[in-house]
Length: 497
Image (cartoon, rainbow, N blue to C red):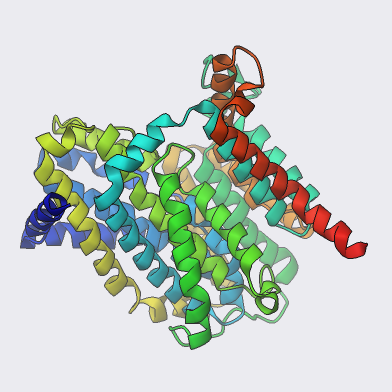
């Protein structure tokens, strides 16, 4: 243990040099700005900036990229809350309650709980990375395809059962998302399927494109079609801090979100989407009866605090398998891995011996980056809330412009724009008939992963389904899935009786 602390102190000595602090600040500021823009996430940005690895020494560039990675998670929550426009897929859940809070004059509290929750979760998760990276990596290696598939099945059922008023509508949305996830090239056989001969669909449907279409553009079109003449309830200004009651409601959600998010970051099970949805489901289930009615109506602060903490905790935890095993569990982590390879550094168990200075400086920079992001974001809460003073017409016109530029910028494809606006019309119809849109995104992201894990599991079991029941952890997960689906119905039946 003493050896770990000595190495961490050495890391702080490296990370706290003026030049490295400047790189950390630049990364955090750039990441926050990028998180605000839909369609331009940390993966795209780090990929665009990879050429700097030829000019900058390894430690400085890794600190810079980590700052972008972290900052984008903070920034993504801002537009999710204020404009219902997730900058990153991990912040989609924040939009569910955060945007409703903003519409009801509580944007300041939503942004504050988001920023502080991100700081708390990021700091605790960084401490856990410092202490338990090798132990958690050992555990993650033991999980096989049956466990991963059951984990995703749990995510599907939880999300579908919790979001929206009707489980049937939630499951319908989920199956639409799963069907969309099948479009493109089969991961295992390489066979092209369900593309209708459209070349642009060979790589599958871009998640950010679908998210921007179903959330941001749908919001703009829905307002123009149905709420344009109604009195605006969104342009309220409130204090950019939380009340005592909001603090009391937020801190347990931050802690729960942190400990839900961290294990998911260490395993390749779909990034931060699963823990954010599971955290939201948990907060909705555990909310006091007087606060439960705020979910989906005026906006519940727990529904922002928990998922934001889970998101940032999972993002930090992706460093565990990346540094200790050389396994990236997110797109950005994969690009960080390629940045390390550009320097001829191989991530894996030997990294802590061969490049210990770089690893510990990177971990120390996460502590520093967390503080920087809190200092950058909290004073700006008031500034962000002023976005709500913009009249509806130019505000939604701006969202459409940002969405169009962001989506077109990904592949310079006009087909993507038609697809985005087509999905937005589907989103308007779904919202009109009270179908939740979030399960579509979950199905789209996790569907292909779940399919691959299912097929791998069936190969292990030689075509027999018993492989899922023979392994203790996958069997336990299937029992939990069953409980999630059956318990609410049993309780409802018991109440009627």
